[in-house]
Length: 145
Image (cartoon, rainbow, N blue to C red; front, top):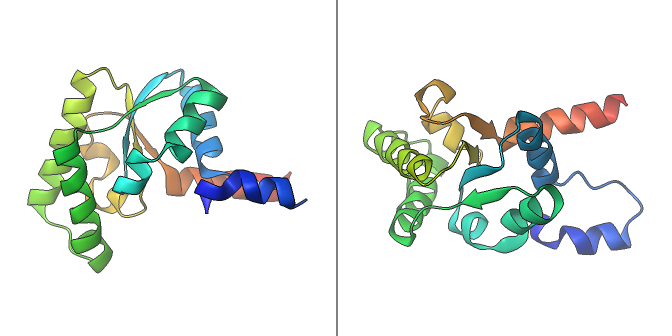
């Protein structure tokens, strides 16, 4: 849905709470300007998320190399979506986050609901922006305002 968000926003008078906007505000508030992005290949490779972070918030998002993106995607769909959480997969995700930290990432976006279940915040080498929690908090704040 977020890939076509601009089309929805242009045709509907109701507010659209874009997940990248909520995440971008959280990252901007932290003072970070360069973060890693983990999620499905679609989320990592398409511009609907990364482009919005860049254009609306000036935040650069780094993604893993292609081989790692393929494995991340495979783990999401073949393991995490099925409720399988292994130490091998956890160690792989942590190693990818470490690689992105070496490339200058200051934090990491968990852009898929299941990643936070695999890699708890305390196991991440970088500060975590869990988009599920951020988006939910943004929706609650909107409703209470």
